[in-house]
Amino acid sequence: MAGMLKTLDPHSLIFARSGYINAHSLGVATAESVTIPTGAKYVRFKATTLVYVDFVTTAAVPGDVVDGSSPMIIPAGTATEIIPLSGVTTISLISPAASIVTIEFWR
Image 1 (cartoon, helix red, strand yellow):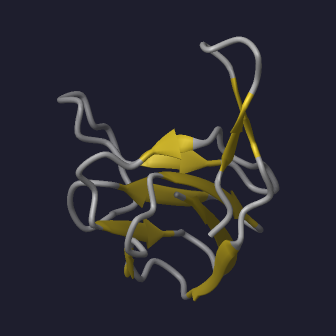
Image 2 (cartoon, rainbow, N blue to C red; image 1 turned 120 degrees about the vertical axis):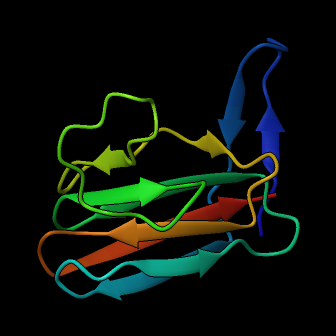
């Protein structure tokens, strides 16, 4: 995995191209578990259709969730911000439609 490059501003980071990218083909409404690669500290997702990501438990397509436990949404065709993975060992993905998700990891 490629590392990070620091800028002159200690509060800003520029991420080098990720050297570790996985692609996952999701079936309709079928959760898939992804193991975080050893040493990975950051992640970014991009998907062909709407996908939900859960960092705590098995992802489910949500209805009304008002207790703070909803999975994060990845809109179709957009990349998420780069997300820290502190304490996370697996990620769960689910989509209401068939989808391909790319997951970039950084150390």
